[in-house]
Length: 217
Ligand SMILES: C[S@@+](CC[C@H](N)C(=O)[O-])C[C@H]1O[C@@H](n2cnc3c(N)ncnc32)[C@H](O)[C@@H]1O
View (tube, helix red, strand yellow):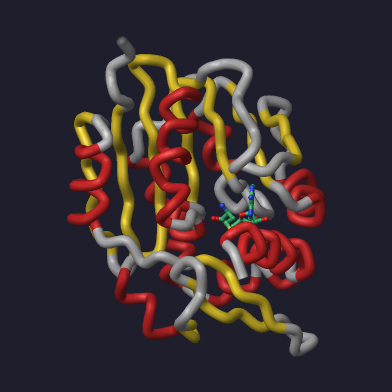
């Protein structure tokens, strides 16, 4: 199996599991607390949210932004995000983040629980896309699972990228990419790619990062 097949399975998992997606946000106080970090993050101007899912973060971003363009590959989660988000500042787009190229630049590019789903071999291209989407004074801001959350997952071996197995309520199983980045490695990787003012910190079992794009020549 190649990485493309794994990514297709990942998209299918979120399409088929859209109705179950919000459950952990309702059940775990840790996640409810995490959503409040938005207030302390430098969200500003026109915001691009990648892999917005059911829109858990989108209305919170909209409160701080001039506009939010929220992108996800799954129509099923976008429908839930649209229902949750009443703000006229928000526009939703169905697109594959690995294929889609932004037609304009944003002051903020935000992604929650997405970076861990990017295969290592696509990481440099992904960060290039994020840099291309940012104004020179813009910031990438991200939130994700840290290494401590790996113990809750069924980690798979012999996959084309680091992967875990997820199950939906009907018993169906899907492999998804899952890379448990730690703050130090992320900081080193982004710095090596030319990003500046890189600040990645652990918050509980999660990581939160803010970084400025490489200078354009
Ligand atoms: C873990 S969820 C994160 C959702 C939301 N950001 C949150 O924090 O609740 C990952 C999201 O990535 C989306 N996704 C998966 N593959 C994608 C792709 N290739 N392009 C865009 N979105 C994708 C899924 O549909 C899903 O909504």
